[in-house]
Image (cartoon, rainbow, N blue to C red; front, side):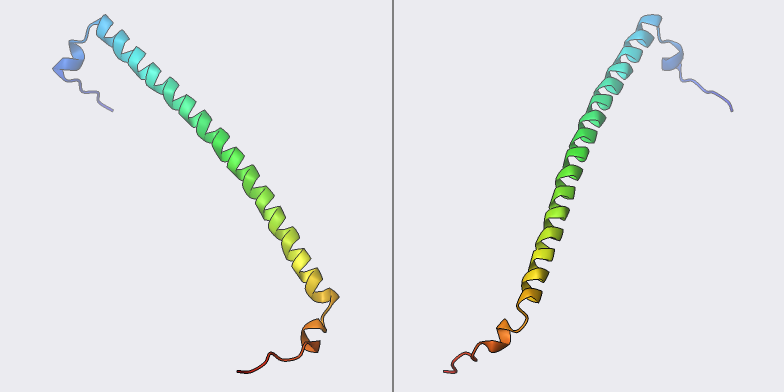
Length: 83
């Protein structure tokens, strides 16, 4: 692997390199904070979604129970009047 440098890269002073390094470290710090915030948001949304899935399952079970507890009720009703 051969490293090639432009004249601008070679002519950088120690101060320039330190400033560039500080800038990169700052960017990484902000990116880490953003990743942490996104992770917290994702976990929170996952918890909400899990609660919603459980609520849907309970509602489905209730609907099945209502349908099976009185299966003949719908057939005992008289037909609707025809106009």
